[in-house]
Length: 301
Length: 177
Image (cartoon, each protein chain N blue to C red):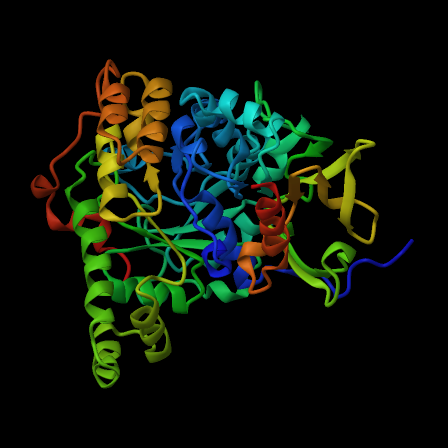
């Protein structure tokens, strides 16, 4: 047979890792805890699902240590759907990440929603073929995660609350700090890098291009189609929805409505239409009522 | 990227936007979601008609799936727009850890070989008599096709600096105006 490939095949390159996130842009990634929920999410138009054992609202209410999901559960979800399957590992728990890679998940979320396994170090994500998404509350945190090999960033928000205010704050902070960088002169970028606690080369690249070198989604507290569209209008590339769907009165319809709202985020007539008759949204907790030790977004450094 | 070659580029999500263009690129993404949204927002029938009327369309990855006549391993109820007489298997290489890059010989665009990025990519499993295969892998699987004004690739030329496939497509769009 004629040889048509003119080089050896490369797996797990930055381009391939960041590329999958590019393909998810404009879409909604939904938290699911069973194969049935994964099917509902896929049928509703999710671009990917996040497999976990308990949604953040339950982790919050039940307490205890939250860990990587059971492999049987993850296998069941991979089996049930054809869209990409993501799964969460604890911050710094590189063995959970090794296990998730062996299970052939499509993306790993090194997530503050689970209990951290290391209060100093995150996972060295360059060691893996599977790509990682990490949370960030500001630009410095995002750039440190990218330096460690993250191929996608999501603003953290405050997971499991149904209160979108933290998500708003984090996406505004990240994009605002990027804007501020673009107006700095070259000699100011050295100090900017020091203040952001991120490598100079990466800071200079962001200042030059005006954007992160990876896709930026938003997460944490999105519960309605309007919330999702708000995130998109603020400049997110896409949306993670956790407890907001399966803790609501009518998950299938709400999921489909949030998908449409994310795609037509700039069309109020569509947004009005998809917001009708969705039944009860998740009950929600105001972030300001949460005592500081229970704020998940403060995990990660 | 198309702007770099003197073309205007606009997003198309609605039927009325379709009326204003000379050619369409259907990008990568999740083909099942694109199918769903195109039905919900009334784009699908208009697009099928535009394809039948000769609108030049280039589909990459999910776009290739949507231009096929038959989808293998689609989700329940998933349909394509059709246009290229091929069967395409969705996500044919495995999970994301099997996504890869490789240099491919593509005679239609000449030397040097094209650096091709495959991300949870589809492959063409049946090629109809009117369809030309433009590129194959070493195992013979077809990863780029054309039929009339329609072009499709399993891989993502937009992720590299080599834009010969998009230039190839623009030539067709200009010839068709």
